Length: 162
Image (cartoon, rainbow, N blue to C red; front, top):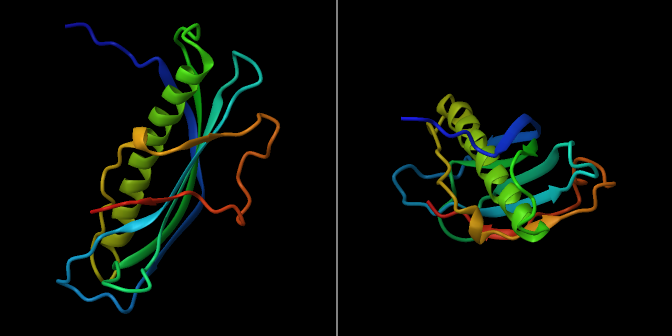
């Protein structure tokens, strides 16, 4: 059996924001639904040989009403991706592939990091649910913008249901 490598290659990724805080009001044993804000931004390369940036922001906060999660989370990851496939299919389809798959790869790292950090917390491990990034809007920014969004920029409000 021959293996096939992905046409999208992750060249580098890093977290420029990682905040995980305990929620003292959390009640163990009470079912919760994790809800939060998710933002996906794509910064295209100005040259075909340069990588594209995918910026993923995830925030989980305690709701004003209802059961609280054991922890609040505010994270941002930036990944640099290179597409090694055909770009003749049209920019919109190509950008969508980079955004959806790039965000999925970055989110898997976020899930692991949250699980590791919270496993040492007072409420035990919190595992973020898997997400389908095909259903989340991806915002494309001009390539000459700063790499990381300003703290004042709020990501789109989407549900993260457990």
